[in-house]
Length: 157
Image 1 (cartoon, rainbow, N blue to C red):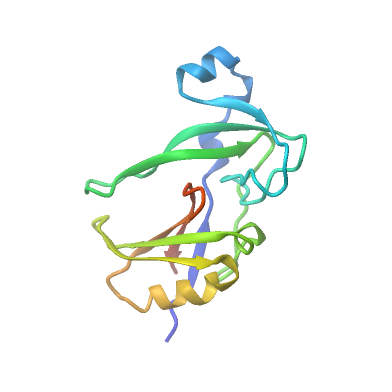
Image 2 (image 1 turned 60 degrees about the vertical axis):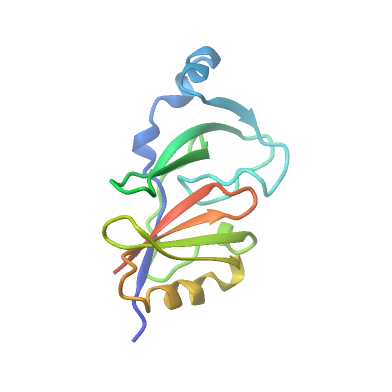
């Protein structure tokens, strides 16, 4: 029996006020404002949509795997100014993930990686179902494989 899943983007409420910061204030936290100059190419981790050409985004460091294990991790993410966090239906795949080479990392409840693979985004749903066949996998992180930045979390439901 296939385990249902839900894709969870980052919560936009965590990032309120960032677009009001000056360039110097952003620099102090390791972040920069950028103007999107190609599409696709600036994947927003709040909306799980590619930002549009001409849109302003912030590139900032983010700790995406807060765990008390050797696999804790952080990396750069893009956020869009007026993005809000969508709620995806069970087993729904955001369009943004369909056209990318993706890295899936399956973790157990203790934050230990149990499985990892690289796939074409158009095979994502099938690969998530396959990963969750392993009952040791509690959740999955999806990363862009090139460049290898964190995208979103996948939980069993």
